Length: 497
Image 1 (cartoon, rainbow, N blue to C red):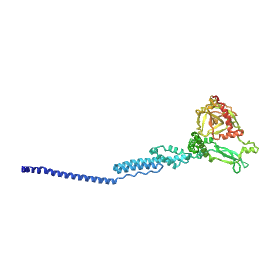
Image 2 (cartoon, helix red, strand yellow):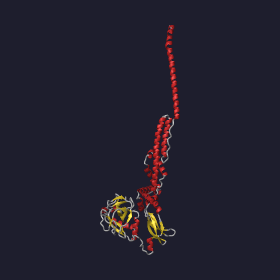
Image 3 (cartoon, helix red, strand yellow):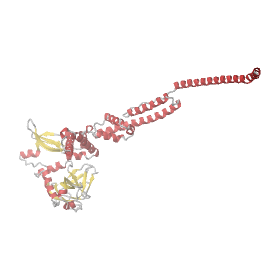
Image 4 (spheres, one colour):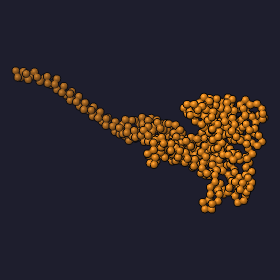
């Protein structure tokens, strides 16, 4: 059986198993060969990729061109380049992708760079404009400080895209240290001429020139005791009329005072004052400091005595006062609605009305409509000006129509000092001619006029000085005339409670 079995098994091994094993071996060999070839190809591919990686290049990203926003552009550039380097290092990008991304990034950065250069130019132009207006601190250093504080904010992208002309203007004008009151006053008085008064010094008559933003007075030389005519403290209402004639100057003045008041309010000396009193004191002090600085360069003085005083001392009786022949007194001035207000009016020696300049943009009360309006006319004049008072409601702050004076309690009224007159744009009629609005000059003689009767709150440049000169010839004073007129004004209101 063993032989039979052996005889029978040998053909099977030879004919079936051995060929199978041979085929298997060849298959294994082929598989190994294929794997070897695959590995070779893989190694060749990796080698090629390494070679390609060595050839990968990233285009240069332009540096910022300069200007106040360079830090922002440089920060954007560094962020973009850093991300690109990271992606290349991790093999996330092919050369083609790198080129595409670089072009897009360069275009965006270049666009922002052009924008920042444009913004920088605009800011420099605005700084120059602000300097001319009185913001002397508006220079390149302040521009850079403005930009830096914005770029250091929580959202620098939002700041970069914001309107910088408005932003820088607010930044520059918000601190009194950047604003020059003296420059503001220079601009306000540009093209104006100083007033003159005659004085006697060393037995000769001279002109003393002064700006009517000051109250003129006398003082003595501390060493020689000689008399000095001098422009003393600033007449704030008069100075304010010059400044407020231009909205930009008015805003700068208000900003200076508000900023300075905050500093004064924090003064330890005011620590124990009530808040309202502290604020009021700081605001009053800041206002005075502003006008002191604004007028300092225009403060003049001259040795001598007033011409009228000198003439009186020499027996001339002061007859040289050119306004001595003017007449004046309290009268009722008729307004557009046929109501009247008491005023202290004046008439020239010839019986003609006189006039005074009204700065452009001056706010006035149109008595025809009982509303306030800005004077748009340039070079307008107030005809037949008279010292007077208007009335405001304490509860509403609005002007009270004169026809309602008798219905209003005096205790409910705030009386406002000022000057009544007629706008110069109106036509004069001959004396005695009818007027739909009544006499614009005093009842002491002079022409009638037609047109708007207006009221301007106290501070019209030159008016107080002129009125005081006329009143001095009548041995009267401006304050006394105001006081007597106010008494008449209060009598028009009800005293019932």
